[in-house]
Image (cartoon, rainbow, N blue to C red; front, top):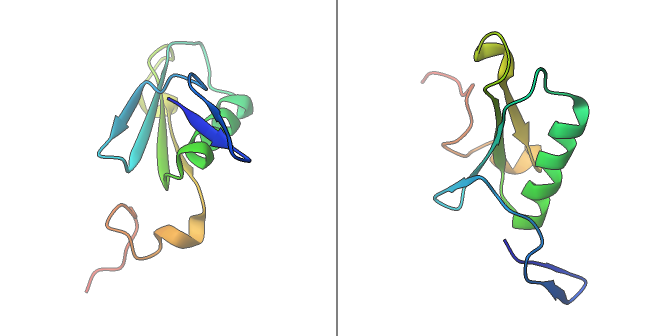
Length: 90
């Protein structure tokens, strides 16, 4: 992915594993356990791409549930989004 910081374009800034419909970044891992640095890296990618949501998916843990983490960029901006998970039932 190319990124622009302060008007300077970096052609190969980083590699995104998956970007779904320019709305969701998915970062794939295969390690024993996710740590805080992985969430921070995902948030940095979301900020560079100006995307609201990301998922960290770790396939190296004992269960997939423990290896799945949601990362939110600009939390206030996804309030009305269809991507929000816990919206009230009307």
